Image 1 (cartoon, rainbow, N blue to C red):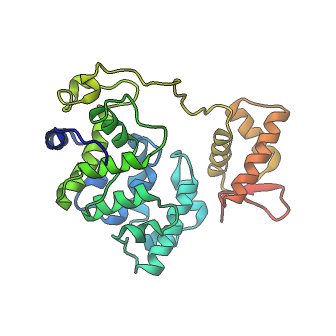
Image 2: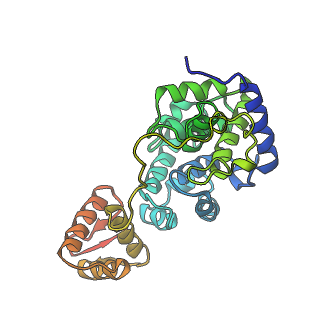
Image 3: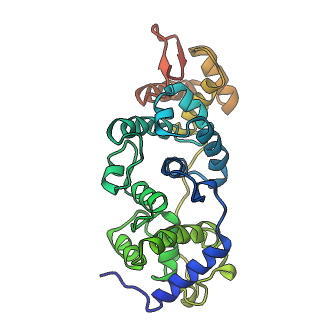
Length: 306
């Protein structure tokens, strides 16, 4: 069994009290927001800062307020509307999920975690989050922020493990309140605390409601053991190249010839040369395979999906 601090109830009370005062007024937290809006927000917020998500979410919900509306949209329009959120495959998975919701669930987002996990692009975290935040179910929602708060406050470690462990999942489960309504608030409150206060690089311990009961603080805030963790590289990666290619195509209403696409991306990234050309070819091929880009029949030009 995972170790739980004797002050577990104190920890819950402090986090919930802090959240009641400091929660950000995000639109998908409005009780009037339908389950579909909560679901869209969770997909958009994967590996993406909330500040970037909110304006896109508002535009998206105004355009496609229901799964049925999104299911009727073209893949190209969906990718264009995704803007610069990154990982545009999420946009296509959302559209695919909308089609499944329409076909299997009568156009209503399912509340059951197993049914949610059966939707395209939905994993354990998203299913638990939608069940909790859209339907008030008692679930265990564990993201990077939650893991960091519990690693510090309960286990006395600077950072959580590089990837989610079964022990972390069990620990998070022991701290979720029994009542479903309290559990839903607890899940979002811990996430918010990790996002705003118990941050990875510069934690705001002086503003933390857990400062007096935090095991990491009590131990003198020891540094993370082991080699330093490096952030994900961006410049020069295939992910950067794929994003640049999609962005160029988003800005064009007609197919872009291969040479013009290459030149536009080279100017955007300020990169030329043989290595650049090889990367363009590799990334175009992967985008076509993922369904994010379509070649014209003769393969001389590319566009977003029709």
